[in-house]
Each structure stands twice: as structure tokens, then as C-alpha cells.
Length: 403
Image (cartoon, rainbow, N blue to C red):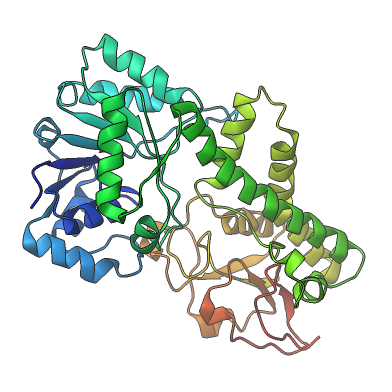
């Protein structure tokens, strides 16, 4: 067991919980501080609240050993040498960073995170300059802790594997913050982290997500070009990428969503004083895909009024249970506005969270005359349809639909 006690603010979430498991396994006494009592109870019972590869068994191991404990009591922060903050900066209705959300949270914790012996390590996305702004407020409140920013770059659902397999980026506002951050992540990964300045680290995180968002937008724009001309984007994509290494990065089309890609691209745009034209163009393409698909469907069928439409998949990515910012919900809304009856199916999503949505089992969904693939879960990739079905499959996920 290591000497330093670690606490994670927002510790039962998608970022905090996998990190907490790994820290506990590495010998750090770790406490997960979270305001959500239901999540805290689940975690303490050894139950993963969201999908994570290897998560259930590894969580049970560290809970049973006592190395990891979840709590709603903020006083655990005062007893911790390292406090990981998983509160980021969301965007507001004008797509500008809401740093006030982070500042309000830190003000509420200031009595527990102000010791000179402590390291405050921010882990979630921060708008450029947000670390320094937050630090300035903390100093005004009497905080003497060292302050670091070490952005996570994991694929959701694979955090336990990726966190120890990817190079970690670290930055700090003083030498002590850098030293302790480097030591922490070296102990987790066995690899010396990459050192950047705080602004460089903030931009690196945004660049990663904006690059992916723009890459997906190119494919979605190509989809619209091909399908509008009566050509099959799926066939073109297959031909362009098959055995041709220079097109290896050519992503399939799809409903590009999730809690980070759009948000981080818009934070970068705000930082550039709205001169990040590629980012804004990507937003228009990606966010416009549901409308394009509905128009594509309308072009095939005419009126959608009274049509029974099966929407397969509500999560934002395949084989995952996270629905945050999923464009399937926009698809559903647009279909309902046009008078369709929309029946939904998703084997991962917890239906009780969405009482207004008509969920059905898969056989009943497949009886609908129209099938829309919202996200290509593996269970959908084995489906085959006859020519009597109208299929919208932007992902190119299903093997055949008889056309």
C-alpha cells in the first residue's frame, strides 16, 4: 500500500471510476467523492454503473479489498494528498465554454482542497486558459495546493486498458505539480509522461477531439454527396479503402455524437474567436445528418405519416450504454414531427431513464416497414432484410437488405 491517499471528485463517472480502480490496484488508498447517492451505493456494492471492459470484476476486487471506497462526504478530500478533479468545462446554449460551472464547484470544495501538501490534478476537458483562471480563483480563496492538468484521452468503455497503454500528457503550474503528476502516472503506466505547458495540454485535448470530429464530418459530407447523386457511399468507401493504405484513415459515415467531440470542437472555436471555420463546418455537417437521412427516407417513401419506423440503437456509439448527445434522439424527434410512429430498440440502454420513448423487443421492431440504424451495435450487424423493407443505414452496418 502506498503512502499517498487519493480522492477523485466526480469519482463514480466515466472518467473517475476507471481511474479510481487503476489507482486502487496500484496500491493507492482511493476514495471516490460523488454527489450522486445512487451511483455511490452501486459502486460500494461492487456494481459498475456503466459499461466498461473488465470493469465489473476489477471493481469488485478493489471494493472487497477496501482499497476503493465511494462516498458523498466531501471531508475525504481534506485527508487526501492528491485530489483528481473530473469536472470539465461544458458549453452553453451559445456554444461558448461555461467555466463558471467549474468555478462554482471548486468554490464549494475550497475548504477541503487548500492544503500546501495537496496536489489538485484536473483530468477532464478544460477550455484554453481555464486552468490558470481556476487557479487564480483558488489562490484568492486561500488555496496553497499545487495545481496540475493531465487530460484523459481514453475511448469510453476501454478506459482500463487504454489508460495504462497510452502515453499520458501532464502539465502543471509549478515544478512540484509537474513532479508529482509525473510520478503518479509513471507508477500507473511504467512510461514517462509527455510534459506540456498548461495551455499546450488544454489545446492538445481539444485538438484530439476536434480532429476526430472533422474527420467524421468529411465522411458524412461524402455520404451526402454520393447518396444525393444516387450512388452508394458504402460501396464507394469499400472500394476506396480496400487494400489501399493511403485511405486507411477514411472513416465510415455515421451519426457522429457523444459528450466530447462537438463540445470540444466548439470550445476550440470559441478560443479562436469563431475563426475555426473547419470546426464550424464539421458541426453543420455532423449535426445535419439526421435531417439529411429523414429527407432521404422521405424521398423514398413520400409522406412518413402513419409509417411504423424502427429506430435501432439510441447510444452514441456501438455496444455502449451511454446516450449522451446521441443523434438518434434527434432522428426520433424529426421522424415524429413527420407523423411516423417510432419504435425504439437498444440492448444496452436502460429504458427506465426514458419513460416517454416506445421501446419494443427486437422481433417486434423488425416487423416495422421502415428500419433506421441509429447506431451499429453488433447484434444489428447480423440482420438481413428483404426488398419489402425500407432501410436507412448510414453506417453501412448491415450485411444485406435485398435491394
